[in-house]
Length: 202
Image 1 (cartoon, one colour):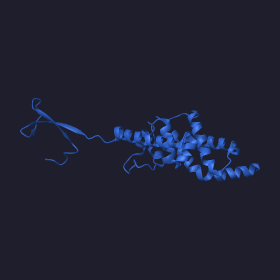
Image 2: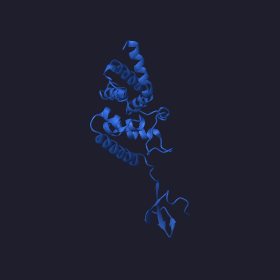
Image 3: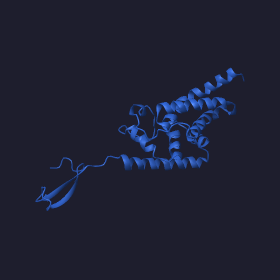
Image 4: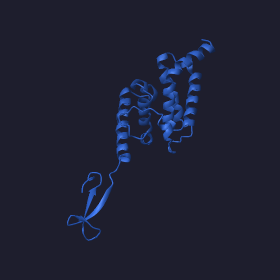
């Protein structure tokens, strides 16, 4: 294979996975500039090592494995805890059942970032990049059952984080009761009402 043929073959295989790679990089770095750097470095490394790809079917996992390893080595400034840009976040796809129309994507990604790396990566690969379980296994290593376990535990932890940290808390107000009326006298009996559940009561 000539250099030109190699380049053409590489670009042909890269084109259908480039969008997924970009989404994966953005989800990891949470920064547009860093994600572009990650994608660029990944593509360069993948092209330099393209001869290792023996089957076209393995190209996708080959590229994502490189991206994962580059990120884990800390090659970029990890700006995981900086303020997240809502406009950029809304461009990121997420097919999880937890996401409803009224859920802020910023909240979701902040919650996702609280997961341990192995769980976060598995969910990103599956939900954002559309990887199969076997493709995730090729990227992360280990067994297929291990991938299933990471996804299950990751989802459970993500759901708990969102429920505990981001669910709307009912506002509560305190009244003092005397003959069925509210008073400010501190000596009267106090009772607590849930403002939401009692909305509309007279």
